[in-house]
Image: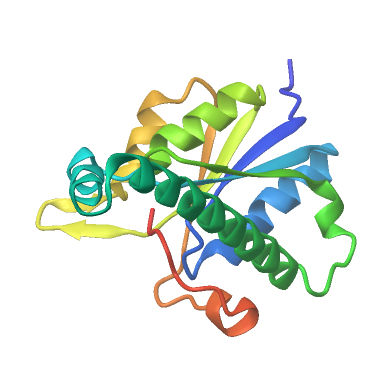
Length: 179
């Protein structure tokens, strides 16, 4: 039986290759008339960082400060993802209709990707990776490796060409995470 792809999770850290990888997710969505859930994982503060803030500004003030900061960051990341998507499909104004939702999840990126894929019952995960060289050969970025090994659905890894630059010049969003 030929697989049906109706739900795609596109994972991004908003690195310079994000538009390149998004175009692959969009291509799949067009071919299968599928929806794309975009996910960006944000690693939470370490217990040590929280403890230091608690000491200097008090536990309750620290808790509220971090809640507000997380919300500002979440909104900022959502805006940057949306800007990146629009810049990636600037010549295709109908492309954004395939995007179902932008999910910013406060977990390690690999865990956020896997959680989003489970939550939306995704059929495939699309994510980018840079080639890492070692003396013995080539390896993938650690996030990509973790997702590939832990995912229960297919993972499409899109190699980001060496030196590829697209995002900062078009959307103004900073580079954030490198898968």
